[in-house]
Image (tube, rainbow, N blue to C red; front, side, top):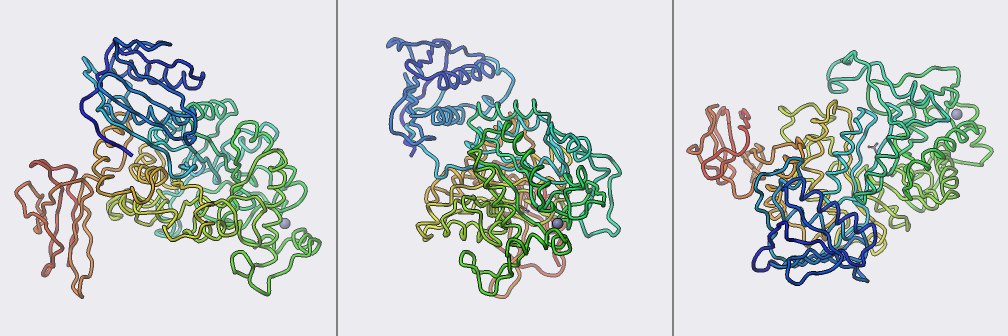
Length: 594
Ligand code: ACM
Ligand code: ZN
């Protein structure tokens, strides 16, 4: 709830930040507010353990009984009061204060003669979901630690609390017990640079690609994230997506005499971990070190896209299936209503065994929705990616679920005209489409309402060779998912969101984030209305005019104004742009229509 009030609170060297009775964690949050204001505006707030009735104050007040991540922010012309029960709430209250200040607060440079104030307002706020995350795939392309830090800043400013790191096509975490993982598994010879199927043979860049994080680097990342109330969840993929591990230790596969290479192409590979004692010992050894590095209550064990071909041909696997008495289902399974093969049940055995190990160390597993196949491990949380069905099925069975459905939450897909945008894996999800996603429909079962604990955007890095490309794919759509994670669905509003996004782009500029700027352009689509094909033009920028030409010339502020979908005759070369106050906002987009 937000109720605007009269007046503004002026920041100046006279303002004291009062943290009487606060914990060291809350003091650190207050200190970071003071430091950020000092850095970006040059204004020096004082710290004080006492209120001074003569002077304006920013008070941090601990109040019992509020939700863990909730806060109240009361801004009056002479006083700001931020109340919360937990440090998390104080942290988010400070993020809201930043949002009420000029976007330069997000930068690193000092604004000269800053005259900064916050509007008077009463805010009472808490998130819809406890899990609000982004996944960054640092395996298909490696990201530097600098980028990881910037990415964590982006999560924090948008009040997300979970950062999930993956996965395959490169091993990225130093494991001291198994050094070949980073020595061998972190590198590949070359990388596919065009669409998977468009050229055959496929075209590669011919450049070695690799990288891994040392344990010291991981500790620093985890600590930095924690200082921003973000948990880092590691994913150690099993039994599939294991090529980097098998390239390092081929004896863990079903064909120990084979050698494997970390692939330069994407997708799913037949060779997977063989469920033998040696493999379980290896994975336990890896996870022991992973648990030392990542204090998260969750460890993600992957579980997706594991073909069963190798297990079907492997004497050990078939022997184990017999020994365990696993059989192909003849009737549909109670949880998901599907019939599962004995090899799918072997995967369930694999995951359940690893779950037992992690549970014994006080951790819980998350797996992609394929872990439903062949029976769900008893305490597993399911991450639903093949649409929403897996998450709903898991929730109905009383398991927690996190919604990361393709296409809405797959931020590796196109978000502007695929014909002219940089190459991605495929798909086309605009900012508006991503924003439209509601993880729990109003009419969902009570169990579904209870067990869907959050939402996450996934940034798979197949085609993101640079930080700029990662920024471009992730933002602004990740912001739409952040709002979906925080805001009750009946409070979400596309028009409100897009009007607030104008300033968020300025914040992202201040943070040097190269977000996709399709928001400032016009999307040209065609749709059939009442049997007639029409051109439909749309801009996401609020209250903008769309101007267009049909002769291939660049539109100006005086070109034809678009008001509604229209038909055309013959061939037109449609060119369109968004304008506000006579100025073009973004770039010209064109499409030839026949
Ligand atoms: C996935 O996209 N395979 C989780
Ligand atoms: Zn095997």
